[in-house]
Image 1 (tube, rainbow, N blue to C red):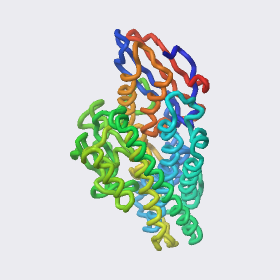
Image 2 (image 1 turned 90 degrees about the vertical axis):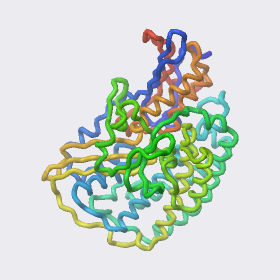
Image 3 (image 1 turned 135 degrees about the vertical axis):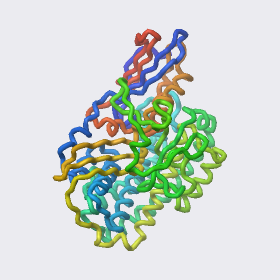
Image 4 (image 1 turned 180 degrees about the vertical axis):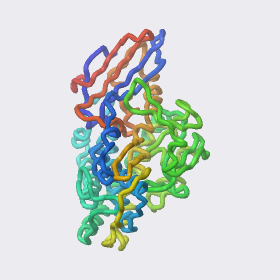
Length: 480
């Protein structure tokens, strides 16, 4: 059994942001409660106040370096709702292409670098090798393909968005630049090449499922509602109404972005700076739901591209037509979405209208209120702004994808903790299982709290009187 010790994991290979798992035991040494808390201060909403509306898309892209496109796009959509602007069709298609590029590179990063090492390495593997470095050592071709897929997505972000890390091309009314044909050709060739590699990744995840059926069925599995955008039952990542379904797949609610406050409440707990959204009609905490790839595929009846539709059919059969509940299925769903994003990017790059120079309409400053929504790789993202007649932001609210999953991540941690914590102790090899429960959701904790700095993950196990019995702080790679 593991004793109190200090263990550190590089956050790039584990979770993006600072989180702490706090496990409470009863008198018999069994898990009675668990909390996944985020201890970084959330301040981005407040210092947006006083900024001009048209500054928001570039300002909010700085919230995170992993998913800046999501904030860039949700922000510009909120600005246009506030200003009453409708971008030209070519601009909308270029924005969707930008979004597909980010989806490809974000999903590739998480699946191959964060999630896959948990499956291809043994339980006793040192954390240093349970990473992209281990993947390079064990399967150089697979690692090279993962890097190439991610590069394809990043190149799209760079070309269309005007910046590989923090895009700036989307402005209220459209885009600041149009697409050149040589840029289109370059991206098209890259997407076609990546599609073949993504199909190889799709085969890999199905093989992993076949080899780990019990884990996929049982790991952090519990019933919940699911929320995501939809387009008449089709998977939708860029625009559309928000839909909630129950654990059996039945309809719960469907609403437009501007009405989100009627349906979604935001609860605050003293244990975390990250908020806890919930479905208002059922209250907190009963109204919790899940978002992101698993939720979106549980909601979708079709996808709209041939390769992804074929995979969705197989995916649906695994649950006999009902929503899949195990958190490990997030990895499977993530790969199907990556396949869709590449197929959709190929379609958009084949559309002649994407080369149009008509990519912007004029806008005028005004007072107003606007909400923008889209499906970030990590789930449904809301930006909500109010501005005065000078165009200055007087109030901003973000419901970031990771916060929607906050309650679900807590449920997942508890479900795993109940199986691995025995008599107040946990074996070293089982520490990673607690992390895996969080990693299924691909959380971006910097997004959820807008923090910066070095961000470890800590685990605390407490007795019924609150005394800390064991504390694991990720500080020594060689102890894992």
